Length: 266
Image (cartoon, rainbow, N blue to C red; front, side, top):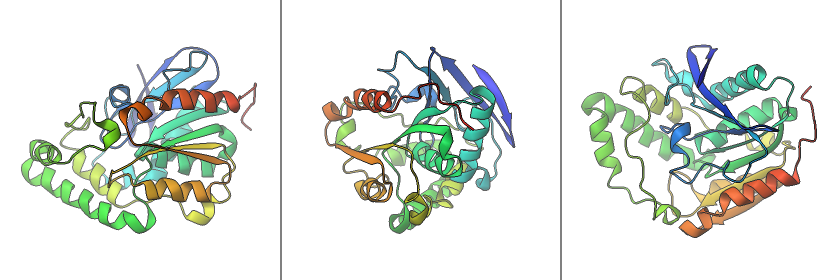
């Protein structure tokens, strides 16, 4: 495990394997080590890739500050691009991430599209018209943690049924975030949104969009809208655990269809 210093945080990362770089991101309140248990690790069928996993600022083993603006998605995208400049200089990479990770990838790819050979956006979060309701939920969660602690937040979370695709998986209820930072991370999430739709129409990076049904925080409507907006995109929707289990194989085929072939980022 290494540490990379960026503005206001040290990012914990791990590199394994050899070959073209594939970056695996994670979602809000999660961390790199939890993604496999959640069915969101897309590296299982990529033996010929170098895999870079890292914890977003404030999550897992990474440090952070109690500053909501530090957790806006464009800021997280800057972290990713700086990390790639340090660990994969000159390389064009493949990347995948769920929810917050998907949002991070969109902002990073809009800022530097030549850096990415492919994007895999898993369970994109609420956006645009559906974002305000989720933002209110994040603000209430932040206040709940401040008033009653993480335990109270975990107890509320137990009352929420998982989407059908996760029916056979045990959900990680306790956030991979300290009680000190969690309110700021929630407030930052409530202050941010996906990029402007018109900007996404210009995104030329090959994109695979993977969604699941019946998840109010990750509605299929966001995935469908992204598919409409991003020119070179594909969309797959999972309704069952068996369909979710196919995602790593789908990603491996998608990566193979868009080889880096020695491409150098300029």
